[in-house]
Structures are given as structure tokens and as C-alpha cells.
Length: 482
Image (cartoon, rainbow, N blue to C red; front, side, top):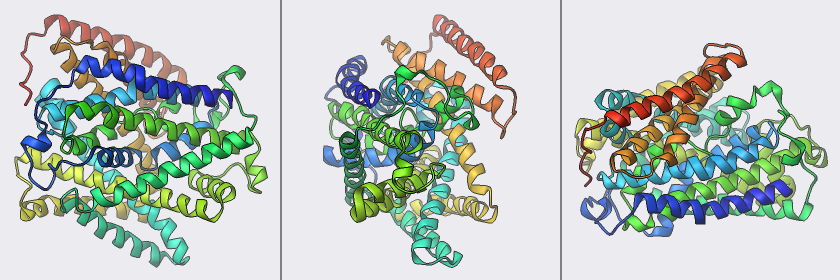
């Protein structure tokens, strides 16, 4: 528990110290934000700061800081280091600067931002890459809650299909309607429930004060079957440390913020909050897997992440905790799925220069978006291993998206003569992580871990050298900010 307490303090201190440093480097000012200057009553709508924080937190969280932290905790205490350092120096910086950069460019989506700083060819790649990632999120986050809800109703697969239809109808409404009609009203309630559950579990941890693996015990991989700590841990724990999916969500709130000066608490702060949630669940999981909690609750420690959530919440928090667990496992993925599809609609509309104030033009984009998502969902259901395959590709694609975002932000900072090292080092590191994972993953090349490690070192050094060469030659003026 000592490592947990120190990690908790580190995240809070990181927000107040490093978050302020990042804010000063970007230098927010009093210029009109897109929510004010481009208000359309649909996507560009000024929302109260507290509501933006709750929506942003739930958008980027989903089940990521829960499931990812549970699976990552199996590696041992090294999970603490990645959550803390990844969140403070990579994830929160990534979320803040991508959100603020979007705000400076009229609420532009991720492909537009990447294209502005990494070139038109990269923009086209990012358009396909990010939209497909968002559609995978929509498909994956329909099926998992539908299974849970279906089992609550009956063991029949029919109920799973019924819940898939119900969730899809909700998705369509949430994607089509103005952001303040559904998302702005129900998201804060779900966010409060998720935070309450995390805080309640943290209180239980302090009361029980279990004996857990500590950093002082070493960084030995406690679950070799899950792969090597590098790079597998850095892919497994994504949303609790850094996640490219967040950069597709930040522009949604960049269109709803009244002042640039709200950026640090709403973007950087939301990511730190997610890191705290991940930290709590990682500690709960270590207690479950290695501290004897599974035996205390009368179950085996080899349960899957959703089972761990339900077992622990019901066992420690009673009936009310069980209800919160269902809310967290069901509502969280649904609320990530609907904003993923909403982001896909806006990214496609931006690329096609198709205004979205008209319902008819929103429908033009929603029909093909939902058709492809349904196809992915059908594959998810028809193939018994479909979910695992889609999820594995999602995990790698998610972190690769963060790589593109970090490099785009780094180029922006360099062209603005700002301190670009705050994103350069994370960009180099995550490039190495994603390359190594692609090489050693059984779903890709399946090479030995040593090959991946050597390649990671080469890629890390090479990417830094290529950036230095580019910076020495770069003369292209920056695109004017709005």
C-alpha cells in the first residue's frame, strides 16, 4: 500500500506542478473559443465547466482505466510506474495539447490537426485510421454491455441481440442530436457514479490496508504469460496512462469550452483523474490476484476483468456496490461508443466539408457509419474469437494513434518556438513501444522479444534523429490559428 499512496500523491502533485508547466508552455489567452465564435446549437455549444469535465472524463475513460488497469496489474508493481509517469508526462500532456490545439483551429478533428503539421498524405492516412478505430470502438462497446444486460434478463442469446438493437438506437440518437440534449444531460450522472465507485473502493483499501507487492520488491514480471513488461504493459494499460482515442474525443469538448484558461482542469485534469481511477483499480487487482482478496471473496484469482469488477464491488460494497459495478461495466462502454461514433461523424463531415447543422446532412454521414459498425458487430458476434481479435487490433491502433498525435503536437511546438521536449520524448518512446509490440505480437509478426527490444532502441534513436534533421531544415510557416 505504500507504493499506492506515494503514486496517488505523485499524480496530484503532477497536476499542480507539471500541469502548470505545460499550460505556461502553451500559453492560453482570452481569444474567443469555437464554442463562442462558431456556435451552431448542435456541436458548438457553450457548456458549464463542471459539465465539460464530467463529459470529457467519461468520454476518455469508458472501461479503459478499469479493465486495462486490472489486466496490467497482473504484471506487478511496474504497473504503478507506468500509470504515474505515463499519465503525468505523456497522457495528460497529450490530452491537454490535442484539446487546446483543436480549440486554436476552430474545433478541428484529429485528422485535420495531424494533416496541418505532418502533411496532407498523413492526413489521409489518419482519416482512415482514426475513423476505423472509432468504428471498432462503437462495435466493441456495443457487444460487451449487451452480453451483460442479456444475461441479466435471460440466458437466451435473443436478449443479447435485443440489447444490441436498443444500444444501437441510443447510439443513433446520441450521434444525431445536439450535444447538450442527451450527452450533456446523462453523462455527468454516469461520471459521478464511476468516481463514487472508485472512491468507495479506495476507502475500503485504506481500511483493510492489505500487504501488496511493492516497488521495493523489484520490477519482476509477475505474469509472464501475458508477455514481457516492455512493450506489452504499455499497450495493456492505455487509458490510465496514454491513449490515442482521447485525441479523437478532446475536440468534442474543445467545441464546448467558453475560455481557453479552462483547458488545464478540463483536459489535463480529466486525464489525471482517470489515472487515479486506474491506480485504484490496479491496487484493488493486486490485492485480488496477489494479496489474498480472491480467497477472502470465495473465488479463484484467475477471473477475467469484468468478473473481477463485479466480484470485488459486490463483495466489498454490497448491493449498492453491485449496482454501481453494473453501471460502470455497462454504461461506461456505451458512453464511450456513442461519442466515438459522434467523433467519426464530425471527422468525416470535416473532410467532406459538409456542414452538420442540418439533420438531413447528419443522416447522410450516419448511414454509412452505422452500416460499417453493424458489419463489425456482426463479425464480433458470428466469430467466437471475433471480440478478442478486434480488441487486440484496437489496443495497438489506439497507442499508434497517440504516436501520430504526439508527433503533430511536437511539430506545432517546434514551429512556434515553444519547449517541444515535453512531447518529443513521449513521441519517441511510444513510437518505440508500438513498433516493438507489432514485431513480437502473435497477431502480427510474432518475432522473439529480443528482436522487439533491439528494434525499439533503434526506432527511438532514429525517430529523434529524423526530427532533429527536420527541425534544422524546416522553413515552412505554420498554418494560421483561428
